[in-house]
Image (cartoon, rainbow, N blue to C red; front, side, top):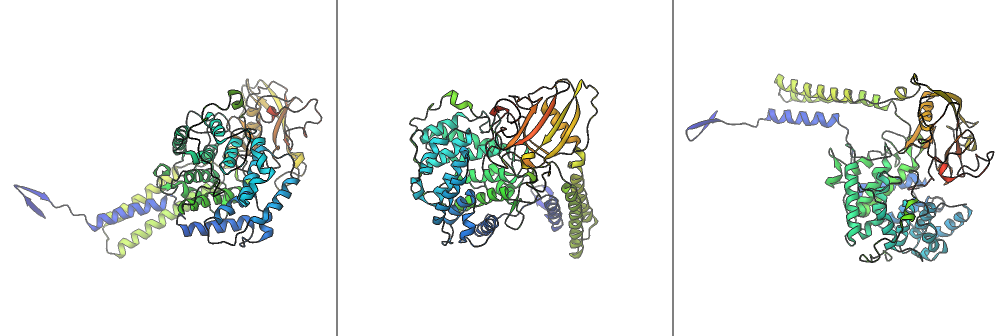
Length: 576
């Protein structure tokens, strides 16, 4: 059919139903082939998810259960307090927990700086009157800067909530944090920026955004860093591992700035928002997993619960997650004393370890990816057959339609097949022949001080008997440790900088703020990291798990244990 326009004839372009069906089939097939996550962004949906997570963490659906509340973690207390600020569940009463928490503090020995700060925040969350407690009043002065950047972050949170200090102000703490910013805009526990640390620093600085130019510029740079660090599936990783907690921290940071983590274009990748990424770790029973497809994890559940509450606070315009008091929020000093209040020497004590995560969620690889491929293949084929059946039912039996659907399905299958996943067998249980060996060393790994404390810990505490490993010129303790773990199928969790934070599911800080892994060479205590200690033929390496910065495992050696030798860093718990 033609229509006349002037002296020319043009074919009438008909947007046929068949063409529309083809587009629909293409989009539907791709949608099914790609992973998608349900969002709980509505206030009602958020409320339901939060209650489920709090019930999981407390072990009860009754938020008035005094026994459950008395044993709640500090973060659960803070979460309950902030959730209670915006919920109709007015029966949540935390005022009676102060005495029990103070009693528990008296039973705890050698609190770390960040741990004490976290407890102080929980006490403030319980009651604004707790600001007058000696424990709270003394915390900032005793802890600020003692464990590097995180102890500045939490000290600023305390100041922002009205905590007293004779030696620090919001301006001085802000200056300290700004001095620690990296060139890429982020913050970290070492020379490299990290998602979690950057997000948590943003939260502490957020009350000053827009009023202090230096803070505003720093936060803008940090947000840009986080946006660039977001993965293609909308999630985030920390020290090489994609996990729920990192995405949760970004959600808390964005909401503290008044940005919607569900719709912020800077934090949506391939149609998936950072909040979608958080919810993708849900196990369906109120708990969350640390890694995709993993089992329920208390650490992940706690942080994801905090993220959901933070989002609910944003939706209800009820302040940030760390706004624990309604009448003590700090006002900025309009730039006064904003300059160098922390000297260069004070800003050099930032060798810390990354956050502790649950051991059973940090192993390399699984066979879940292979199961995923099979499931994806079946799903794509089933979807294609359904679409073809629908076309036939509605009388759209043109062979081109069927061919098009089949081609799209085939393309989706090819894409899925070409994505490679590693399994433990691909990595563990193998060792390369060392043709350039210049000698050999002996390595052993033990955890005698925590032997039998968990099902996955050997009863005798021996993870690796003395084993001989050949070395090449320039090999380090780190190189040999990785080679031995690979050959003997021992899971390792290694952070940036060759820092070994977990061996065989046992992690730093699992058994206290002073716990972690230490290595000894020939009975001596190296003062450098395992990636910097170059080995010689005949060296004997011993890895051991310590509960008190190495003194307990080194009692048979002369001299005291230098803090730098604990895997070259002093441990610091980031969020917990």
